[in-house]
Image 1 (cartoon, rainbow, N blue to C red):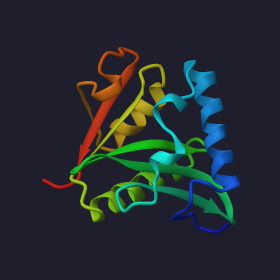
Image 2 (cartoon, rainbow, N blue to C red):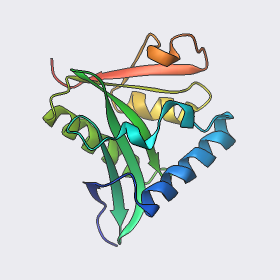
Image 3 (cartoon, helix red, strand yellow):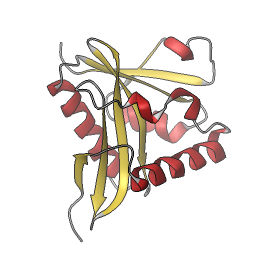
Length: 153
């Protein structure tokens, strides 16, 4: 088996659309919400400040994730997904997003996930994210858990 290879890719390819659609279906089944209202492919505008990555094994997309600009020093993680639970690919993609975000000048990353999605909350906590007050569109949404990780102090 090939090692998992991660690289920045266009969010507009059929394969990217397929994995993002799969994520939306799984989220809808798990939480009752696909998450599509808080992320649109045009959020990844091709600028230095936003990016989408795909992890591949044997050439097949197995995981993905994105960072979009929230503010000058803060990126927001979006659409982090691994097709295989407990494979380690989610952690690899997250580490890649963090390193790339830091290289692009972000000092911290923030995210929101559903309280109902206990596996995601635990995953982010295990990877050094801490809970923060809900921000932006999630501010008045008790079903959301918002988190952050400081990349540069």
